[in-house]
Image (cartoon, rainbow, N blue to C red; front, side, top):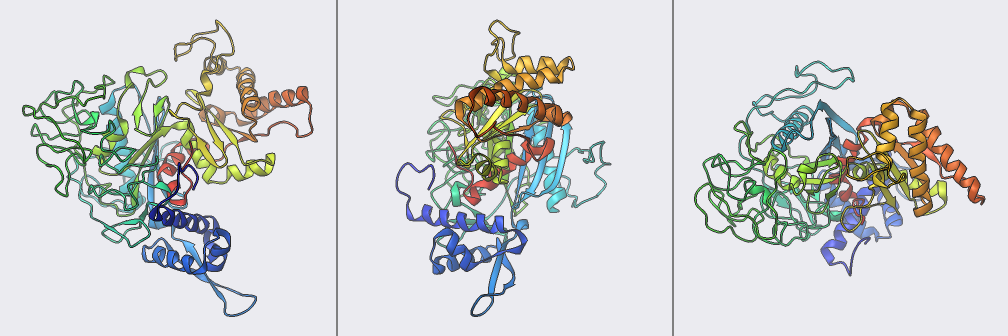
Length: 571
């Protein structure tokens, strides 16, 4: 298994085999694939394939797609993936807007939203907008009653489409407590909702869709490599993000509880001045849901006066934007948790950040977010698993799952490496090697926009001078797209020379507004570099990334879906 530090245990191996089969069912599309072909392409025995596919059919993830003529013997039954058996939400938090999508297991967009957003408006405001978009998409796309008890499906009077054909978001009311039963499936490490929804397969390290504190049947693998969801374990499976005790987001900005004596900045905490939010006290009896217990399912809170919470050892209390909860904060609700096919929410935003722990660092242009535990805050608020990553990494993952890596391998004759360059309100890169996203040990890979190419150049929002991002955005602001493309091409040429990538893909709002200018301009710089170096392979090809302006949001949804198919790993 890729990314494994040592031997795999039996349950992990079975999960890996299930992921292989699911991925082949996914790529086969509606035509399906036979059990014999699955055995040939995975290297598994026909008996193992039959057991896996029987379980997948029982979970509702696979179905018969008809019969195919055989060269000898009876016709073969072909199987296909059932796209509607699972869904994921993807949210792109840009500096000035929010774009959200609901996709099925195939990655097809079922519903989408776009709304203006000020990333510097404060944590409570941003979380409120994410919660509203997630609820409305779930209600519209999955027919789950919304926060006001209205069942929404399709064109339902939520508002007229805007100029881009997207529905205008409405406002949501308060939401009730989360309840969601889950039952483990036999042997394969597949977890499914108790109401007959899809198996939230733990294969490939997927975070099990659990809000019951039970974790993953395969040892608690999360999409980031380990840990149980919704505050029930850290990314390493060892309790809270700090190794024990409660996550920072369960406390107030100073660790002393809510300024109002109740809700925490992330919507966690009891409005009555104590108790724990969803996931912050075990519904299964491993912590008190009304006045204590560990939000992580491990470690314990120190005794404190009502409404006061001690700080978490080893974790700095966030000082970020709007950490004091507003009086109108929405409580955690049922809308997402009542959707039996919803696997969770992926959030993508500018870095730097810690993908494993879901904690933001000094987001470029918004340093006040430094130290904010966004993943934990959203999990408590929404009651479903959440994964956080940089916008460029999410987009690159979506492209890799969609086959860009294989295309890059054919183009360059290598293992399928490519760079996704995103130019919008900022500039960054997502790197894919061998089909997996390269994040680096600290999620620091891909800070492409902050390579200095002009000493003592214009100041950048990161604090340095002469960064490619500052030069490129300045050229865009004065309408000189040719110069912006030349600067972007210079950075791409540096990247190609350093990493020997096979393909460069361009995306982002600014590129989407003038795709030919950027593809041609960046390609010209790479062509010139290839001519200087000689050789017979030619320049690294430059293309427009598919997906348009919603590529990051779709990639954010893949943070939940890709691990089900064994496609979510990487370093």
